[in-house]
Structures are given as structure tokens and as C-alpha cells.
Length: 327
Image (cartoon, rainbow, N blue to C red):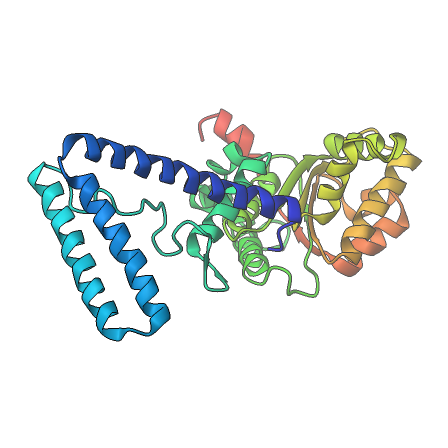
């Protein structure tokens, strides 16, 4: 994932704060030891003076002096460690404090991002995500196939066989995110068959891969588009609009449940088209059929869907109702 400059600065500010906290902790430990262990501060001063002398010897290329001074510094450092242990402290009590010793809290090992930095990106995205709590419950580890019947319907594959195929295609979407020719998904199906749940499953996996995901119901989406269309350019809502268009994955849930008109149709087309131009992925779930989508919106929208979206139809019983009935 490519972080925006603001996101990168925010994460790096967290590293700066970590280093400052750890420096403050080390300073407090040092003051504590100076008060409790007689002569410890004098030993530190000797080490500092020997280090300065070694630096001067290095400028003179005096190898003999450098070796002698380094030996003295090593002996004094070992003396400090023995003093710490004798007073009941760990021998590394005054070593530099790092949350991540691999990168020493810089976020980088050489020119490569440290693993802790990659994890910081994931944590940041979760913090920014508007579906974090949902994803703790709605992910593939909680997906249950037993809600789908294994009986064929009208010559079609059974709901169980169909959902297994759909889930397989969802994993393919995740594994090859950004690479597929049709890197968008349209979930079709009646209410309660698992469209939103599957959207959340995909979101969970992609956020853990450090992609940005934004989830909106159709009501929320069109409210944001309306606010953007009727506000001045310096309005804070513009930031939300940029996030809408630039996030790695946009999920539009329950398309067709909002009050539709020509303005909404035109705004939906502009949003979908701009994201296609930016090569950003979108998942749309709807209770409408393709025919109803064409009637409710425009031929242009349906054309974009047919050309650029994987169309995954889910059918079966209403899982919410089954859960309510305890089945």
C-alpha cells in the first residue's frame, strides 16, 4: 500500500514519540542509579573522557592509543554491569531502550521498512477503518457453510456448492488483489444470504495486508457525494471525498435501498468511473437483479459493471432469520 504523505508523517510521528519516551525512561533510570550506587556516575564520566580521547587518537591515526583506550572503556563498562548486578539490577538496565531492537525504533533497517513499520501501517489502517469492530466477528474464521442447503434448486448448483465457489473466488480476489482484469466485485442476492458478511471477510484480509478499506452503506455514500457536490472546495468534506476515491478498496453496501434520482445515478457513475480510472477496487452488494440495476440507475453504470466487475450471485435461505429461529 502507498501511504499518503499525511499518513506517513502520522506513523513516523509515532516513532518519534516512542524514542522520546524511551529516552526519558533511560534518563530516569540513570538518575536512579546515580543516587543509589556510589561511584557509578564517576565511572560514566571516566568512560566519556576515554571516548573523547579515543576520538582524538583516531584523528591522529594512533592505533596503539586507540586499542588501549578501547580496552579501558570495555573494562569500565564491565565494571558498571557488575555494580548493577551487585545492587540487584539487571546488567542491561542502562542499555538503550527500544520497542523494536531490529530497527531501534526508526521504522527502517537500511532502506527497507522494518516488520514493525509494516505492522504500524496495519494498526493505523484499522484505527482509521470504520468497520474495525465488525471485522472482529465477521471474517472467514467465523464463516459457516452449514447455513447453505446442499439441495440443488431448479437445476442450479445447490446453495452450498454455489457459496463454496463464491468463497473460492473471493480468496482469489484477495490473493491477486490489484492484479486481476476484473478487480471489482458485485454481490447479488436476496437479503440475508451473506453478501455483507463476505464483503467484511475480504476487508479483514486486505486490511491485514496493509491495504486501506472504506465501508459505506449506500445511504452514507450518497450523503457524502451530496455534501461534496454542494460544498465549497475548502470544506473539510473534500478530504473525505479524496479518501473515497483513493482508498484501495471501497465497499458500497445495500445499493438500491436509498432514494434514487438522476443526481444519485450521475454521482454513482462518476464515483465508479473515477475509481476505475485510478485502478482502485470496489465491492458493491445489492438485493437488486442486473435488470433492476439497469432500470434503477443507468445503462452506463450497468455497462461499467459488466465490463469491470466479477458478478457473484449468492442464493439460499435468509441466514439472519435462521439465526433468529435458532436453526
